[in-house]
Image 1 (cartoon, helix red, strand yellow):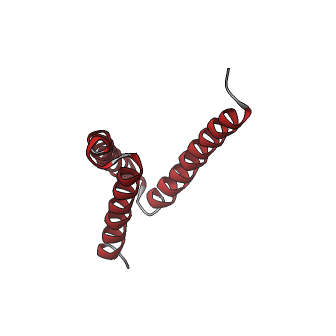
Image 2 (tube, one colour):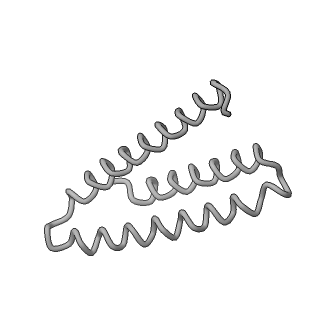
Length: 95
């Protein structure tokens, strides 16, 4: 049986995951609003491919590193690299 703290932690993780999906959906919608109707399907397909590739890469790295670095250092390292990548993309495509 789960302790109350474990159940609360799992509930918080579930809610955070749902919230991140909502933020992602709103972000995708706001980006796609910048395209014409004819270009939305193409932009959606490209965005999906890049998201799938980046998720696969990040997950693969995250699975391989804990045995060498430990879980906490892997979490910090992968998160920091993802933030650097986002910053680089935002810097590159800023208006």
